[in-house]
Picture 1 (cartoon, each protein chain N blue to C red):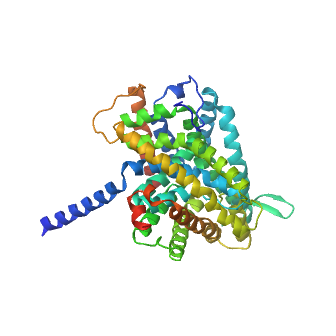
Picture 2 (cartoon, rainbow over the protein chains, first blue to last red; picture 1 turned 60 degrees about the horizontal axis):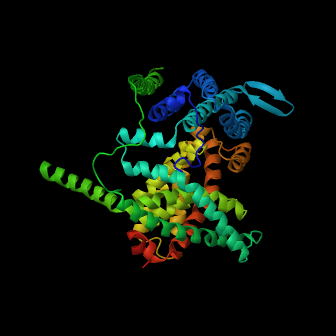
Picture 3 (cartoon, chains in turn blue, green; picture 1 turned 120 degrees about the vertical axis):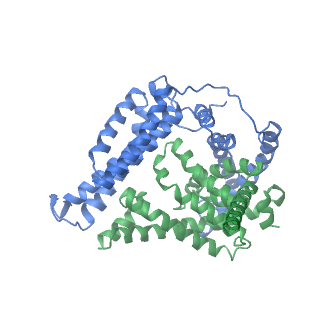
Length: 259
Length: 209
């Protein structure tokens, strides 16, 4: 039951799956920061290629590529349209002219940089989300000093979303049976939001009160050391990796300031 | 002089800590996942009713009204991380927006701007402005002016008519936020009002009793 949630986690045995989830979060955040700090498109290009290779190592490529393409294709289209074609260039050197449409060199370079940066951000966090098991993440976070309540909230949110979704579907059907019109004019449909969300909130609030009593009875407000069901190892190598990623961010800032 | 200075400084920190601690009862801790869940369900409701809205901050605003600014800010921030775990990491770059929406809603609710439906006009406008001011630099600097397809079309049209990227992105953003955040503020108010008061956490009972 504990594993029933909506995350895109894919069970596996790869080196990324065995990594401490905290290391993965730190790396994903540090890499995303580095590519946004640096101005050279070759850095995010190289990192994106490394991450593409890691997708296959972790055997999560099918899901991640599907999610990535769904975001990246429309993004690339609008980016090229706005930055490359429509925006008046500072340096009017055309890169490519097709009929009345001109793609500007400087605009294209800007679009390429932004696209590769966003690609690194998306791929890094999708790699993390597909290979970090939520319960392991929770334990690893608590071992790093994240308050247990915060960790509870995080996991509970992941688990509650499918429950709320089922409830919302049931309420929608019930209200439609009572005459809720999803084809009516905009005004009526706007006021229908309340008709759908109010019962959802009230019923979940009642559950929340019960849940709060249950949690208090199980020592939710208790202080003191906790013991964990899972054991999440944190080898020295990963600790070094985390420090190095911090150094990389600082190095990128220094490079940007000097260069 | 210096000792009184530090004393008043400390008491200010204590006040802040106390204000944060009173927000976080066990009921609040349980409400936060519900808020995140309601944020996640907003899009589903909007598509069921065929409305061109995101409605992805109603849960954050509800927490602001019912449980206070700190809990709401946490709800907004965590909701973005949860979205990333569900396969939508692009939202991470916008994390300051829901955090600010949570804080602003919470403080406005505390000073009585969610007491009746006429007053909600003010939070609706303030939230629109806050969301636009924070989101526009992110859209321009991080995403080169591109967001969701609908907004990007508006931005592209404005850029094509010769306006600067910042101006175009800000205009597109304020149009979208006015409908979405403004609308969400009213929705959050009506939902919070329809909850029987015995199920409300302390701040909610103060506002709706």
